[in-house]
Structures are given as C-alpha cells and as structure tokens.
Image (cartoon, rainbow, N blue to C red; front, side, top):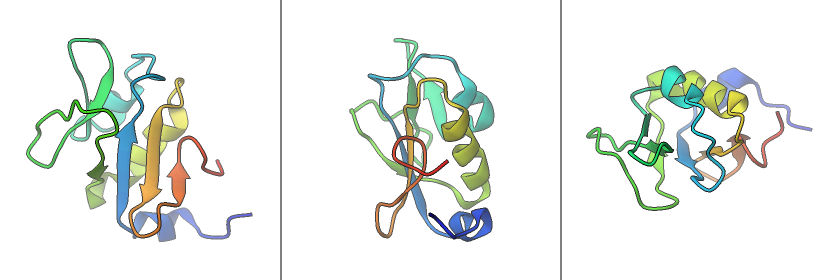
Length: 102
C-alpha cells in the first residue's frame, strides 16, 4: 500500500508518455494539460517537448512541468484508454496510469 501523499508526489520530477496503441482519442488529456498533450492528424494524443514540438516517436517521454503535475496526473487517472503513463523520473515508479495504485 502506497503511503506517500499527492503533495509528496507532485514535488518530485515526473515524466509522462502516451501509448498510442491504447489511445481512444477521447481528448481529456488535451483538455487537462494542452501544454503537455496534443492530437496529431491520426486523431491520437502525443506528448509535446519543452519547445512545444509534438513528439511522434513511440514511447517518447517528457518531464512534466512543475506547474502542471496535478493536471497530468488527473489526465492519466481519467483517461478512458488508460494510455497515459506518469512515473517518477528518479526511480520509474508509476504515479498515475497503468501500473499505478489509483
């Protein structure tokens, strides 16, 4: 059972990526954090790099901006396709999305 709080999690560096094979194109992630997620012409969500460039390579990961950590965690928790992976950068422990205790 996980004992850390949301506050502790959001103080740590997090990374996020989208598994496009599971993406339903619902768009909740783009609504929650448009600075981090965007749709491509294929109708699937991808992460954006710090420069706003869409990262189309499968498994592309980006660090979550500190001011958007809660939004990205909420996007992963609410995603109907369960395709958004949020992990602590330091040790790879899932925080939200597949494999996380939600």
